[in-house]
Amino acid sequence: MATKATKTTTTEAETPKAFSVIETGGKQYIVTDGSALRIEKLVAEEGEVVTFDKVLLTVDAAGKITIGTPYIDGVTVTASVEKQGRYKKIRVIHFKSKSNRHKTYGHRQPFTAVKIK
Image 1 (tube, rainbow, N blue to C red):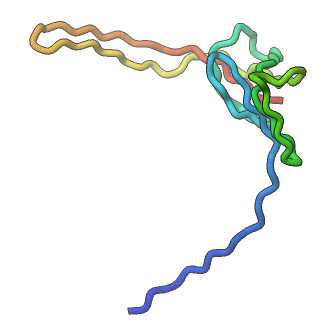
Image 2 (image 1 turned 45 degrees about the vertical axis):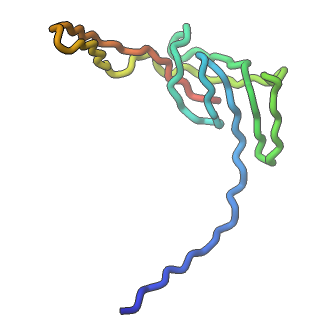
Image 3 (image 1 turned 180 degrees about the vertical axis):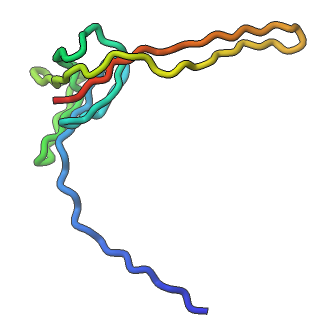
């Protein structure tokens, strides 16, 4: 029985895209121009423009990398607030066996959906 050989072709390397790494809400996010993401809740109205000044790393379209110590001075990332909302409810259950003790409660984490400019 003959097996069919598959031919793999190598494509040219993609051109590097410009991106940045920002820090907000105690978390780090990789953002590009036009990307949308949900971050920890910000005090901002829908349609408002917010500025992130804690930029940890930037890579431009030419591939030049700039790393901050810990942040890059003078570099900001702007975004517009698309939506304020809350995630789906999660159920948290505390249960102790053999003692007929249990407690159930729910939690909905708030978020802010932003679109990077």
